[in-house]
Image (cartoon, rainbow, N blue to C red; front, top):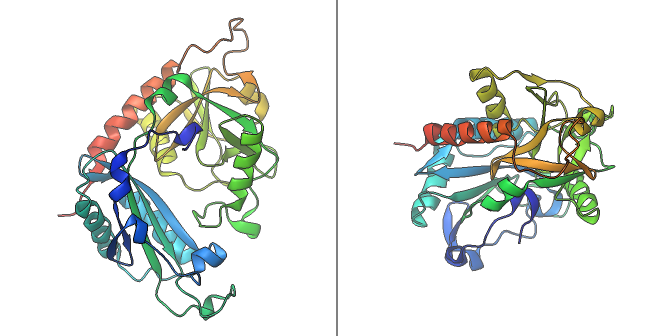
Length: 314
């Protein structure tokens, strides 16, 4: 069972879901890809996480743009138009009779190779496209109790090593960060950029609130988060000062509030970073009081935005 920012309660309906494998709908127990697949062998592919809200997918166009941008960056042909891929996603949802409270993992790898080797030129099939849709809602208790972060030694690196903006199947950088945080007893890892400034978390984006202002990183060392971008947009639209800027752990430890964002859970408050409670430094009562006013306000605004902007093809 997942913990931390992706904590959820299991749903028995997921035992019999149909999964789309290259357009064929199969029972989850029969869903397979080749051991020669580029994703299995090399982590060679891109993916998206999507949320279904009342029959529509929130921010669908933004997710598709990021997916196709990632594919172009790694010189991979998805093989379907965005419209065809969207139709395939909704065919899977409709086959499972899903309308709400669903999390979707859309995965595209370069395809099957004829021998185990990294060179894309040994790929002999079109891209492999797998769509997994599950009945899955974030644990509501997580919002009220907050999560604990631990600053890990693993850094978000320079783009000439591996561009951190790629939402790729190669996630070992984030996985090792997650392991370090879990070994330290935290829910998720807080990751720094090569200069020592706060970058992001291993599976979510990180924000702090300082004296009425919302801060997040420059965005140069993390994927272009859809929820992150929409949270910034909501703050600006509602007159909340918001800044994408370099900041250090000094600023984090003295923040009034902190929270993380992601497609699955939306906004999740942070109660503690590196054993330090998140509250104003002049506050002598450091016990957790629940989400702060900024987290509550932005979370409510975000849920409304998801409902308004969920899309479904005609």
